[in-house]
Amino acid sequence: MIAEIINRSIDLFVISQRWAVEYQAAASIAAKQVLADRIQIWDETFGGYYFALRIGLLLGCLCFAIATWDSRKRWNQIVAIALMANAVRVAGRLAEGYIGQGWLEPVNSAVYFPASVLIYGTLAAWLWKQTSEVQQENVEAAGRLR
Image 1 (cartoon, rainbow, N blue to C red):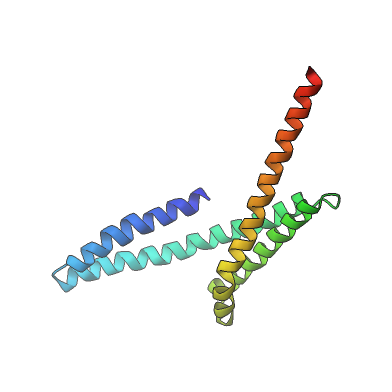
Image 2 (cartoon, rainbow, N blue to C red):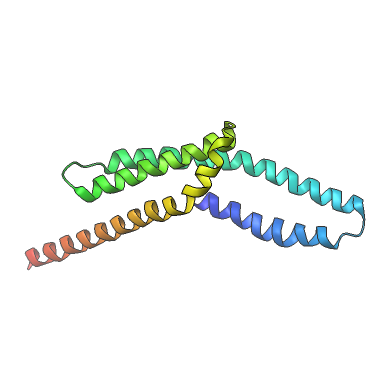
């Protein structure tokens, strides 16, 4: 998460707000070419870095799906399924962007927003439920201490 924030911050504040403005203001073709080369290097670097982020997300989702699966708790099963679904979504993005499966682009584009809302909404609801359960356990434990 922190790596993604850093990456997006560089993209916003350096590339979009600084280099793009300098490119627009550049009077000479040589200056524009230098800036275009910088932006191209950033794009190529970002692609390699983003691969590592996506692999991390894929593995993290799989690990958390396995860790949260509990056949006795329905909510844990739901969140494990959501995490598995996210792993499949990320695998599709990896296959499109890094394995050359261009046919996945329209599928990934169509699925991205609804899947993100469903997956992360489910995770948020589960975390809220977990917090409520922990608070209830703390109240009960405090009552037993009296």
